[in-house]
Picture (cartoon, rainbow, N blue to C red):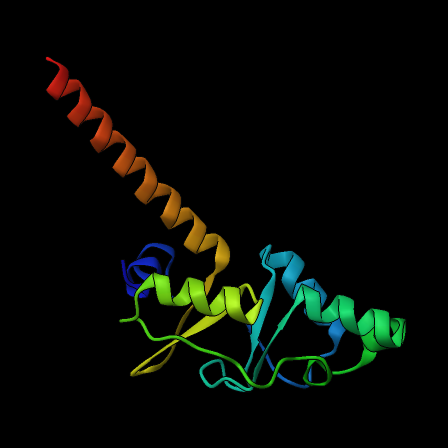
Length: 145
C-alpha cells in the first residue's frame, strides 16, 4: 500500500501554524483539532518545521512555563523528514521507527499534500491483517469441506 492510499482515505487537510504564533496558541490549535502535531508554515504550503505535543513537553521541562509565550519556531523541529505520495507505507513505518517520531508531512509535486501519523499506519496494518485472516479462514473452511 502506498502513502497516497492513506491520503486518499483521510484527506489532504493539514493543520498549520505560522512560525511566530506563541506556544499557548499552538496548544489551543492542537486541542481544538484533536491532533498531536502541526506543520509550521508561513503560507500553509511550505514547510518551515513541525511541532508536536512532545516538543512542548520537552520545552516546558527545560525552560518552564515561560515557553508558553515563546514562538513555536523556538521549539519546532526545523529539519523535517517528509515522504512522497508514491512511497510504500513500509518505508514510512521504518523511517518513523528509526527517527522516533509520529508524524510525517507528505510532499508531492504541488507541495504539501497531507500529513500521516503512526496511527494512520497502524490502522492500515490492522485492516490488512484482518483481510489476510479472513482470507486464510475462508481457505481453511473451503479446504475442510
